[in-house]
Image (cartoon, rainbow, N blue to C red; front, side, top):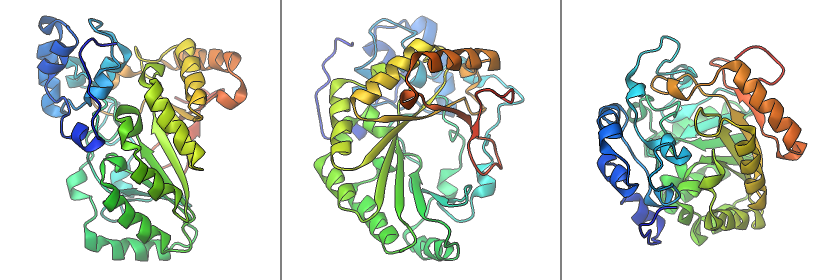
Length: 338
């Protein structure tokens, strides 16, 4: 753990005080600028550094290979060109029917309300996504509503981004009210990394908003390593479950971060302590700039075989890849397509 003081603040204050300078991040962690700074500065010109101080407080002082640090520190390897790593690996620009709308799955409808995130994960598959061209304006709700009404088989809306929990409770309440007005919508799923990086976001106002909705609320948090889940984060997540909000976790398998069965098993157990169920373990989406996190297919198969042998079935996340144009996640274990 770090030895500088992290003072608890409300989540809005933390969002306005993110670390965006590689120099500051390295100084806080007592890391050599000589070895890491030049590459971090160059890579951050293409995809900026952005990380909450609360998340940095979970990192190890003086360890350049800290698994949380590796997820956020820009690296010169991001600048390399690899032909199979592209800007839109999931073909989302083709699935972008209306501003803010991604309709890739038959009964589920993905709504991107913001391009903002509390943290810029270096492996993010949307690091090149043109958010400013695709965010819905207030008047776009009428078109979105008409689109949903024209497809009555859609019963679930997924809030994504960016990160929807960077939005204010007031704005979330507006969209919740809009979606609740459509009888066909029964489930609201929220994908967010904010509860793991700024756990104070799970404040009383947000919990009240979610638990009092007529919609069945599912929160999918994104945690890749057990060190991300301190006691406060776990308590806040467990509180959501106690309020009848279903909480799942999805992870990305990342070289140097969580590429061992031992780490993944520890993550699953830690999640279960917080009453969160493991959901998906994604292999890396081949997005430009993230190739240094990639793992060979045989290594992935070996790790997952060990995970299956180590954990009870209810704690094993599904190993999947998302393939552009497919109507579902593609299970990977036991097959040779990676």
